[in-house]
Length: 355
Image (cartoon, rainbow, N blue to C red; front, side, top):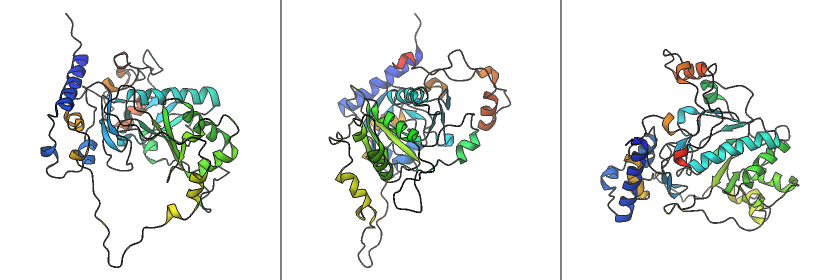
């Protein structure tokens, strides 16, 4: 009888997680006794936990088991900032990105998506840049269209996304960079049933409120937030059956073009907190492993797949034999792969074991 070792390992990891959570056998005291920030622990993991895909906790306080990576390149996307190793997510998040990128090209003529941060291999707090993105259900999409060529590794590290704001004015869209296609892209992202919220800069939200003439049913899911003028942030709901995942409160009824939006254009959101004379600034507090859901201790220390390729969504990898053995740096590997023939299945599809 043949045994699928990878499937067996996933089942073992899933069973261990379930047992630990249900019986309360986990203890995080030893792991966090020295006060090591959880972001350092999770940021050091290069590969995911081999287990059934599960999001634990809340978007800003949790972790991810059984995460998969989106390929660095697809027919309708390119991943940016590869050195961060944040191309990982729950299979439902990765699948949505692939579908959204295809729909954006086919239905609204967007050239393709440039992907920002999704999550770390095992989720958890990040070393820099985000409070959320911890459970594999958040993804950043650049507002810069994908160029019609494959970017080099160095370009993906150095190219900056384009802000939609006129920096000489307060919360004002720059008409020289904003286009109706940007509006269609954001509204398409919000239209998917599994999407819970799409975060954008308040100026972008106001622009949509003032100019969107299509179906406004999804406009309420587009939420104003600080920053987010270079990219928008997609957040999906907890997958069905994810008992350890906590959804965010449902967005209020309506299109969100009301007093809640007007508040962002007052002084209140931008006022600096008042300090008492002689008061010292509080020391920053970083979450430790003990602050996260108990399952995250097992997720952090669980078994990993043999390679990144085994945990990558679909089959969009280039044929390994076409990459020269001497290509040891990631820059040279990407350069060599650009000339290599595609593998048998050029369009990424869900891995059968994860459907």
